[in-house]
Image 1: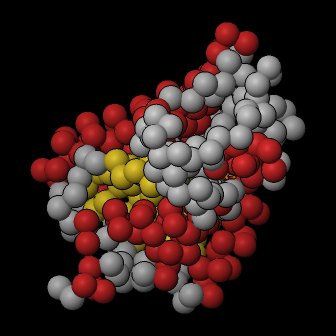
Image 2: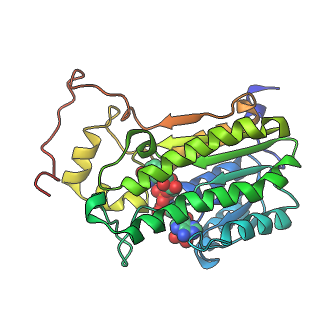
Amino acid sequence: MHTTEAFRLDGARALVTGASRGIGRAVALTLADAGADLALSARTEEALKGTAAEVTQRDRAAHRVPGDFAEPAAAGRVVDAAADALGGLDIVVHNAGVLPARPDGTPLLVPLSGSDQGDWDHVVTVNLNATAALCRHAHRHLTASPRAGLVLMSSVAGMMGMPMAEAYAATKAGQVSLARSLAAGWACDGVRVNALYPGWTRTDMTAFAYRTAPVSDWLMAHVPLGRWAEPEEVAWAALYLASPAAGHLTGQALVLDGGVSVPDSGLAGIPKPPSPFAGA
Ligand SMILES: NC(=O)c1ccc[n+]([C@@H]2O[C@H](COP(=O)([O-])OP(=O)(O)OC[C@H]3O[C@@H](n4cnc5c(N)ncnc54)[C@H](OP(=O)(O)O)[C@@H]3O)[C@@H](O)[C@H]2O)c1
């Protein structure tokens, strides 16, 4: 196979969740650029209008399969609706996820000791329980595909931990553990399962941080590459994991974090401004 062909997905049928914006939108457009037809999911059909239009501009099919993963039966319905619309599934990129949030949608970053069980349960329901349900339902569709790939969007918080967002970090660690277990179990069915560990990426989820200069400057001082990732950079890694180029890769979590998970112990000399969270 020619190198460029190894990154093509011509004719593949792909479900992308969390496709209305941010990383999921970029993944959907990148897979469409590579030749895949798409089923796009978010909580509402309306929220998916923009991404669907951008996919169809690329001459690829875009089916909207909404579902709210806070509701236990939604993941199964989304998977089956996507498979019905596309006539099967070859690729699933499960990207939808949440930080704990206040009722107005702004992130609720508080230590575990200051949060309540309801905050924990919501994040676990959306990020981890829905991931398990989605994988369970996707299995029968993916086993029918000759080029099946499942990619779970974790976070480097799952590897490193994240004070003030313990539930989020725990669910993201759980997704990688699930990916590794499924990879071993599903290899004999010809289904590859991998995960991505993105670091700080410029999306609505992180707008609270990148739009506030002292917070953004301080966070970026802890990223050796010194900048935010753009959603497309995460999407290109998702394309790699879903493509024939990664045909012998399963059970792995690819770290894409600008080096944030590499402990420099101060030896690299990267200057650190005072913490905007000091005394918070
Ligand atoms: N941004 C980062 O720095 C970063 C870093 C590491 C990992 N990640 C992970 O990357 C993924 C995407 O993050 P993002 O930054 O692109 O987030 P985002 O901009 O907030 O987008 C989140 C996406 O998930 C969907 N979603 C949220 N709650 C949902 C629910 N209950 N049911 C169904 N869909 C739901 C949203 O759809 P609606 O339009 O319906 O809200 C939206 O499409 C997440 O899993 C996140 O944990 C992000």
